[in-house]
Length: 215
Image (cartoon, rainbow, N blue to C red; front, side, top):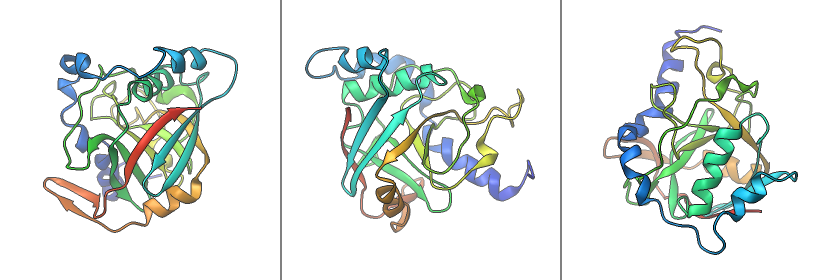
């Protein structure tokens, strides 16, 4: 594996360039909407013994992911908090690169970035790999900067895995995998994309996460 391959540097850059607004995350914590219904229901289930699954109903079909709450407890809890708060409802997959990944969870259809909770610890050293159909946290060039945005690998992206404690080796934390709807992921990765302002690889027809819910 060539660590400094230009194409790979470009691909890695796509994971965090849309997160340039991450420094405002801490100040925006109060802006997260409160979840409907019984508060804490999803988090309570997360701490139980049963597998934790989240269904993402998109404009192109449903994707169900199972979270690895044992190996990635911080990332799993963070994701569930956003689900429970309704944060992902109405967001889009704003960056789609076939042969790499589909990224979402941070922008509305008009490319407005949503406020987030504080950044979390990077759990990339948990032993989980960026294999095909795995779910991972997007981040900036800062190690512990992931907030709400996530991506689904559409191939095995070994160069995104944790290697060492250097800035080049921190990696991207995997915290789950697609267990239903891989065909939907495949349809999304094939959509036509273009530019939207400063953003590249944006689907020309918005791929909307209509609802995210705990199962």
